Amino acid sequence: MEELNCDTAFTIPLFGGIKISESVAVTWIIMAVVVLLCVIFVRNLSVENPGKTQLLLESAIGKGVDFFEDVMGKENRRYIPYLITVLIYIGIANIIGLFGFKPPTKDLNVTIALAVMSMCLIEYSGIHKNGLKHWVKHFAKPVPFVAPIMVLEIVIRPLSLCMRLFGNVLGAFVIMELLKIVAPAIIPIPFSFYFDIFDGFLQAYVFVFLTALFMNEEQE
Image (cartoon, rainbow, N blue to C red; front, side):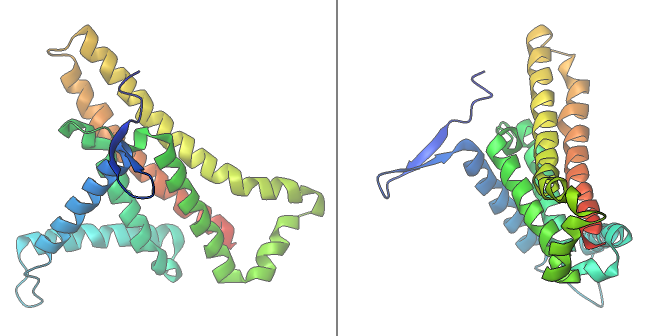
């Protein structure tokens, strides 16, 4: 239970003391590492003589862009950088426990924030493509009395994203802690590859994939 709690990492002495939780502190660390790696990897980019690292990164980004274009269409390329950014963040956040940090996605506040951002993006994509008038009218389709259900769907989508991510990360964490207690020497190692690594990246993929699908539905 002590591990499940999200404690205060430190306090900023402003406005009576601003408490920074562990999940926020670890998120800042992830952001710093990602920014630093981006700076390092883009220092020596070349069009004529690209290196192996550049080719690898271009291939990975290219596959990511192609995947989201297949899901949402080329007309929605503007949203792909955000989706890839969220994918990278959630993927790192889910496996950062291997390095001795508490995964931020184990904090319900973090998964709620990610879900709310996705909700805003989903609704914005529908308004941007079809206009505000069409967005308002679609709540009464196919018949007006379904309007309350359609409005409720705005909340249900992010709630499902939030609880799916939080539940899977929390469940994997609890299972690993139990295995470490029962057999701390050998058994947790193969399970760690699944729960900490495979499942961590899988949940990141599921989150952004569902966000892309919901955007497609909203634009119809």
